[in-house]
Picture 1 (cartoon, one colour):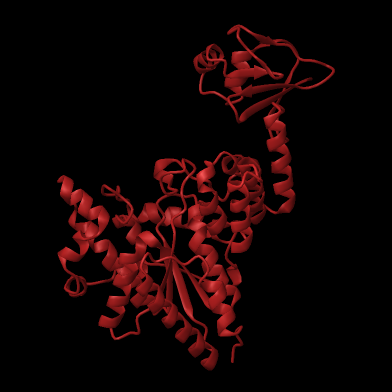
Picture 2 (cartoon, one colour):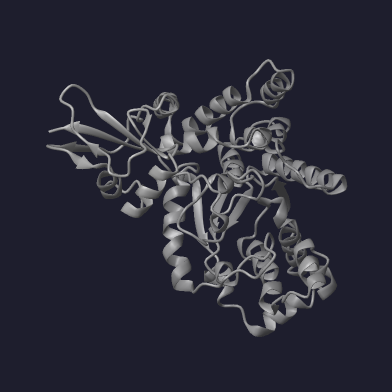
Amino acid sequence: MAAFPPVDEQMRILMRGVEFGDERTRQNMERELRERLQRSADTGRPLRVYCGFDPTSTELHLGHTVPMRKLRQFQDLGHQAIFLIGTFTGTIGDPSDKDAARQQQSLEEALEKAQAFVDQAWRILDPERTLVEYNHRWLAKLTFSEVIHMASLFTVQQFLARENFANRYAKGDPIWLHEFFYALMQGYDAVALRTDVQIGGTDQLFNLMAGRKLMEAYGLEPQVILTFPILVGTDGRLRMSKSTGNIIGIDERPGVMFTKVLNLPDAVFRNYAELLTRWSPEEIDAMIGAMERGELNPQDAKRALAWEIVSIFHGDAAADRAAEDARRMHRGTAPSDAPQIRLSGPRPLVDLVAEAGLVKSKSEARRLIRQRGIRLDGQTVEDEHAVVTPSDRSEQVIQVGKRKFLRVLAT
């Protein structure tokens, strides 16, 4: 019989960060989870816990890691973690967070992206204790009569009450019939997997509740659902999403990740600290209190946040290097991983930055010079015909904008 930590200890870990937006739902889910954990302790059977991800791109970002880290917590407590790739639901497109229909993709496209998701998932999950599933294996086999049966359990009014659908309906924007089926298909995943717990974002609450209803209809005990706040993107306004270009990818270089966190708006500090760090609630509250009292500079707080996040995904040594590189960049010095070029003689500056990929074209380089956006050894370049001459004594640094550097050395 498997041994699990005390139920109270598990509840303290697993309920941290949970948010439903409704106190009654929270109380019900907390009670049901405690009952499941106690039953698990009594029988020795681990809970089956899953979280699903539609492969809409090949890159997992920090927003994906919020439910994945909760999945890892269940794992570490001895329960069965299921990493579900929505290879079928990904062909429909989840409308939960959209004010327009998603562009559909083929099953082949979804499967191609799925492997990249799995490879990156091992940055958080333990591959030895993770079951990877793909929902096209059962959803593609549903008969039309089975789909009709599931649809008969819901009303159109229930769907139109959802904020995103309600807004689109009020504006007269199209709502496609296939979008209604997404919640049914995601809900059926719980039936197929016979799950005890499902993890998701607060925007997924309707879909997760649909899973509970479908499980009851199929004679199963409805799963417990745990939802978590949405991570805001680097713009500080919209949810982190590849489609809006405001992501921090978990495979991005440590220096890039550090700089992106450092440049976040001050207002999103709590959102990132609570959802992504290993800090305790008391530590987070203390830091925010110190900022509010003027005792802690918000930039210093974000520097600590950037170090913590880079450390989680790349290790302490990489976080130390990224922090030092950020300080070097602030002084106009190239970071340690900046590209290098060796010159044997003078070269036009616009040629160098274009060949190094710091700009898309020589004309863009000239435009940036006119806008005072290129520096050479800390000095703003004002001449579009500037020439870089290699120095035998030291390297020279070309800076394009705030984040792009090129180190020039003599051959």
